[in-house]
Length: 273
Image (cartoon, rainbow, N blue to C red; front, side, top):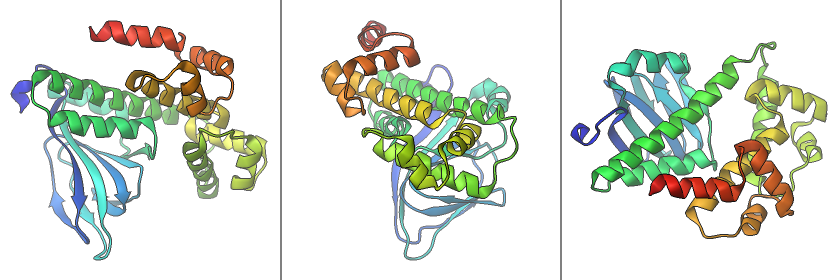
């Protein structure tokens, strides 16, 4: 398969795996990088002796030659996306970009989850054009992970305790599931059990953005996907991603992306000709 890729990343494996009940993977080491994403169910990954509980939305990055294994209870199954790729001569530089962490955030019901699905689908289509699409999608995924890593690395505030992180995880989960609705800080206060000023400060410390900034970003990413993949009007897209007013949506989109939605779509079309 490598011969179909003219430049890195060289993708060796990309598939959706439905594991049977109690499926186990004995310790192993791979020569390439592995992205492992839990789509449904749960499973325990052990990477170099460190345990990671994978629930829906969890994404792990495993480096070349890292010893890892999978453990799951006899009555538990899971569905996951698995991707193995190589970076060629850029191996060492690439590794420096991401630091040492294995867990790469929670992407449940977010645009990146759709990209993982597209990557697995395109990989099994014949033709070099599909190989190039796979590389493009993988690079976009890695760019999202790099952005997350930089946000986490730039955190110069005091360490966040487990209780604060758990509260912010609840806030994030609520927004990821209800971003199409009218989410207000009052809702988030009720979920987290603390005041809005504390929520804003703790959420920014963990995610690098305020809750409302993050909510806007989720909505805009979904709008981009809808604009490219459907024939919906701007008003219909605005409504689907949580904006009752198309003008408010238009201002938000241009503020985040730098161009209007129509200009963004026009640029996408010109790039694919």
